[in-house]
Length: 305
Ligand SMILES: C[S@@+](CC[C@H](N)C(=O)[O-])C[C@H]1O[C@@H](n2cnc3c(N)ncnc32)[C@H](O)[C@@H]1O
Image 1: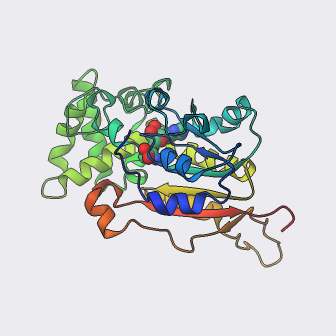
Image 2: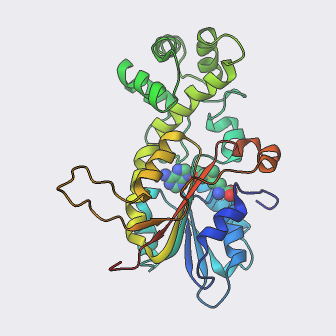
């Protein structure tokens, strides 16, 4: 979407593009902000960006309005766990850089029909990929109390997760199907005071992560990246959640010996960001949703090094 400024735009593209004539995978097309910047940084006959998203709406939007020049850009629908098939289908065996800007786009958040925000009423759907079999409403009904409480606690870092679980269960028995409003109203009495909007947002985030298998998908992306990023190429991940950031950090750091007698398995990555890069105060002022962003990058080792 023209005018949309992607998070950590300059920092991500500077780290990602090591060869302006190369092939790059933007695994999270979204509103196309990063793809547009990467295309603009490229030059030469072979240079191209493959932009992927599990949300068909993102792919349709980018195809209708591709970044210039359009011959360097291909938008494809797919999930992180399908990167091998997406690249294979285009005859690509390796990429010079892979970028993932995790989470959801502002368009998805602001669309009441997606059920991702408690600010407006809508069906409690939450699927980023509409081909997934289960909406958040169905997930809640098919999940037992222990798993629901564990999701609220670990994915949402939500205090009073047991009380929240009971409240959600009660609401689910009274409302068929649940909506974002009925879920918000069920949670409100548990979180009085000024922290209430944050707590409700944490509960929504937890359900979204569970419904979209976001941690499993990230784990697949990190595993596939170690194979498809070419030696000397870069992996860049922007995470907004501490669990995701920890997974990225662990995947790219040099291995630590578990036991003094056992050689650790060598890592395919050389970290480029000893500490995560955070948005500037100015970027957060212009885009408050960037406030929790953390960018980590790593260079794929040359074979044999
Ligand atoms: C934060 S947005 C990306 C914004 C984009 N960088 C931009 O500048 O407009 C994240 C996007 O990743 C997509 N996404 C999330 N999980 C995914 C997955 N497992 N596979 C593919 N796309 C995914 C979402 O649908 C969303 O469009």
